Amino acid sequence: MSDALLSTLAEALAELVTTVETSDDEVLDPDTAVKWLENTGHTLSRLGAADRRALDGLFREAALRQPPGPWREDLLMVSEGFGLTEDTHAAGCDAALEGARRFAATVRAADPATPVPTCPGWTLADLTRHLGTVHGWAEHVVRTGATARVLARDVPLDAPADPAAYPDWLAAHAERFAATARGADPDAPVWSPGADPHIRHYPRHVLFETLVHLADAEIAVAGTAGPLDPGTAADAVDHFLGNAPYIPWIAEPLAHLDRDGAVLRLAARDTGAVWTLTLGGGGFTWSRESRESQAGPGSPGSPGGPGGSGSGGARPTAGVAADTGELLLLLHRRYAADDPRFTHTGDRDLLDDWLAATAL
Image 1: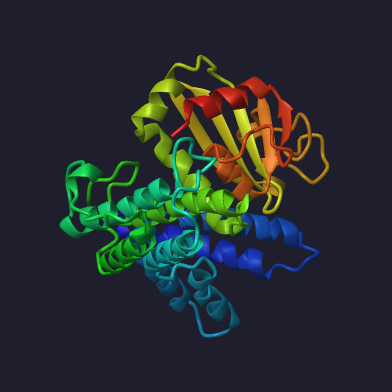
Image 2: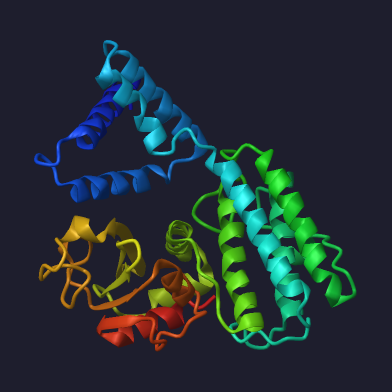
């Protein structure tokens, strides 16, 4: 793609976004405008750090070609509105560290022998040692720039003999991982177990695994998981779905489900996000949209009601609705599908088959 074409496309997108943002309510429904911009922002959020910087530069160049005035000033705000000027890599490193600190605080005063109901056969000591291993393993991969798979058992992590010391050991590994990853080039190539073989994969991977295991610890200690930030939980659902085809023990069972053409819809009550999963071709495809972008509230085709359409008008075979964090924990089988927090529509067997095939 030529530089001229990239520049023109960026200018067109910036002007379209600015037109949507500055339209009068009588011209464009505000709720519709917000959902359009949210969908665009979600798409752009998938860009790596280098591409984000490049797009920010193209947006600024487009703005500065305009004469001084309100229109130019509005165009200059496009990058900020989409978070292109934020250091998402550093933010991910910080979030992974904060999650590990919360986990350590949750388990520090608890009996290490406490069973973890959501990880049958594990105790809090096992769970803490596992999460410390995740942080230590990821730090090793990022620091060494590994180009081939690294097994956790091959990384010297020096776990303490006393399980009571595991929380502090985990916290120390989390500190080292965050510091190493923050100082690394997020766009540098490195082996990863998923779809993105770059260092930027690791803060997200470690953060989302930490949040799921934090829920495990909270359930073991207090009987219930604390709330998850909806935006972070939505990113974690994206991460899970995007990487599932690269995980052999998920990809293989999915390839043999024999449900080609079946459509599973996950609807988030708190944010309006809708994930549509279409099985077939030895795997599945997926998309994420806002509920309002698919159908108006209360309309027959709204994903919020029975018989709603999924992405591209595909009629869902089955659907499940809950808050975003609850959907994430359902996908990771931390909540049972029969839990009353979930509302089901359509062929329930499809959801059960999916959950059985994707068990980690």
